[in-house]
Amino acid sequence: MYKNILVINLLHIGDLLMATPLLRTLRFNYPDARITLLADAKIDGMVRFNQHIDELISVDKKGYHNKLGNYLKLIADIRRRNFDLVVNLHPNERSSALAAFSGGKKIVGYSSPGLGILFDHLVKNRNFDPKSKNSPDIIHQAREHLRMLEKTLGITKVDDAGLEMWLDQETEDSARLLWCAEFGTQPFPVVGFNTGASWTTKRWTAEGFAAVGDQLLERGYGIAFFGGPMDRESVQEILALMKHSDHPRVAIFTGRVTLLELAGLIRKCAVFLTNDSGPMHVAVAQKAPVVAIFGPSNVVSFAPYDKRAIIVTAPDITCRPCGIHQCDHHSCMKGIKPEVVLDHILALAGKISLLPRPAVFFDRDGVLNIDKEYLCRSEDFEWLPGAVDAIRFFNDRGFYTFVVSNQSGVARGYYKEQDVRVLHNWMNRELAKQGAHIDAFYYCPHHPTAGELPYRRDCNCRKPAPGLIMDALGEWNVDRENSRLIGDRGSDIAAAEAAGIKGYLFRTDEQSLLEFVKEKMRSD
Image 1 (tube, rainbow, N blue to C red):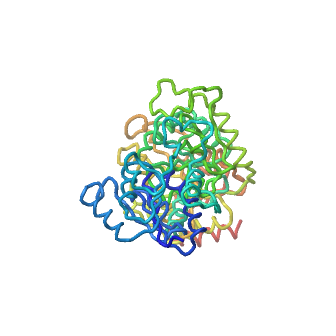
Image 2 (image 1 turned 120 degrees about the horizontal axis):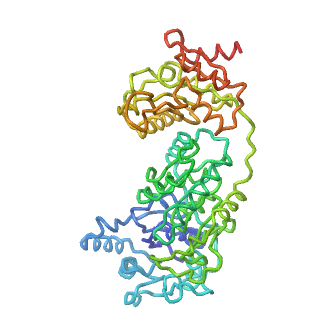
Image 3 (image 1 turned 30 degrees about the vertical axis):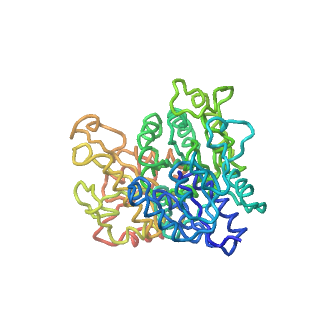
């Protein structure tokens, strides 16, 4: 019976998560053992709170431990721990050397050539062998690990609950605030988009993602873009192709969140649309419904480890799975039709049946915050008394809450549209901390005489024109008859009247916004 076990897995996100059934099975078979996991420091958050390990050793592969002296110190530290069982889960040289020189009483698993002589029981993993990894009789990588335990340790009792990943409360809270800042307490399903992948050839086309995104938005769904900093460019390419890229139900988390926050956000998605990638396996570990797009990689070995997942491949492509990273024709991805992907998403997400809800439209400067000329920075922003409470008041009563504001500072060159969006996102994060939210922000960046083209023009969105309100009415299922606008200028009220909703003129020097809205609600 083993009492001190070391498991080595220094690979990527998906590989690390596919090792979690093995960790659970080791705990099931050796309940009193101390189990230590050695993982890459860059992604160790994926297993930091794993309930089946007692200790996590983080290896900075490309930093501190990339120096020979520090690497040898790591081996020496491992040897001092006197492991009686060492399990290596990848045959690369770094992992194999750590296992081979670990001093473990018994060393099992996969190894690179030469170092395997120091293993007690060596197993060949066909998924890592270029000559056989596409063979029809291979099995999923997670199951391959479990089979390795049977071959090397005689373990036949498997406790397989699928891929597992736990989050701490701090991450849960952070993900909730991030989500609320983008979507509020949304009454619509949100579909997550993971557009990146480690190989260029594993990425579905930008045109495909754009087409599916537009169709989902037109049907009333929300979209959340995910991925790391390296995926920002591909997301921008997709948004440039979309008709509705500026839709208020579009959120971009790409490059903005940690791996743990990514997991917490994916958990909130109705469906997760993804290429074959690390986030795909994160979604599986979070039990999210997955639609996975596969091209050059092997579906059998690395598919979502979840029977509910839907895998989409191009029909009649004889060259896949090829496993190559560069391709001139990319037929396996270009052959996947957006309408096929959309049908699978809709099947998992379910139908949307939203009843109309009344809305409240707030002007921003002078209603929600102190009116400082051409405000664009969060450090200059000051909520007016009762503003947050007034927003929460309408949130609690089931109203949509919108902000409609003229932002001619963009036309005048004082700040950019991105600055406006950053401030609005900050406002919603601050509101989320206090249990409130704005469902969408609409603003007009134009002015009829100031600035340069394309912002210097007459438009239908600058109040007193009703364009901003009409945009919201067209994008949300709003009960117009019972909706209201609260503004501090005659142009606000004129816009409301032109859109066919009630308008109330608010004076900041008379009462707080909360007192004002309560009074108006009582009098209606």
